[in-house]
Image (cartoon, rainbow, N blue to C red):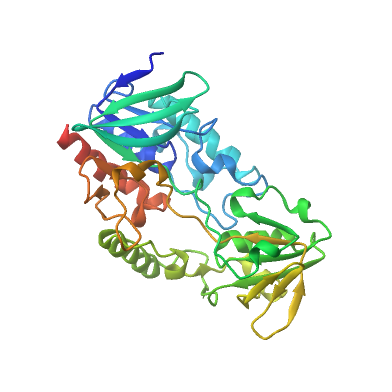
Length: 361
């Protein structure tokens, strides 16, 4: 393949957001490979799900909503086999989705930078298949998600810890922590999942969270709370502020599995430790807990480093985005950013962004 190419629209990422936009672009009669191209860094379909730990199952804490048009394939995550690893199910379904709609995803491709070239954009990539390459585009839909940008808050003494520190993105299995004293940090579903998996594996288990856990005593997400959380994300995105946590606005639904964990005393969070010491953590009341490992289930931030040359970031710490479009640069769309971050939001936003893209071409 040549080292330079030109195409009207580049989509970065083939997770839920990128595939949703691609589906609607195709529905609006744009042709994959001619009118738009999808670059995805993953070795396979499935977006970030292909990288999640093997023991994670659909329906335990994380929900995956169907992509638009998935019913044409006779597929739905609501009826998927929950005995299989979630990453295998999502990868298979997404792969079949890509093939069915002929989306021609190009992978593995790493997007390193997006820069200006006159009125156009130049997307610099590398791939084992064709090395370094530049693609000129009129418009760019960024759907890179968050998995490649794990967030670990800084706490005093973190550098001095002699044990192991693992973020959600690097978690492989509970067995790696067998017989160890483990501190899990975080207030969301990943932290809860780790605690339940480690319960009968770790020698000791402690849970630290920066804020009290807001338990919602229903297995389904509270719609009012969800709407409020999405609205908070939208306000922050429009104002160019750093995005708030979704779980801080929705709370954590208490399933039977979680309820049992609370009753057993496994899911009882302590206020965040005040500092980390070489062999453990020091709590605000002065007590000390020995630890062999700290698992940071502290979330992710939008992965936007490759857009740095466009200078989209505001002084308030985020990007100004409304209705999926950058308010700083009208050639840039942010799929899956802010209020679109959930699988439901990403699917709805796909149509909205695709309409705007078509209108600009």
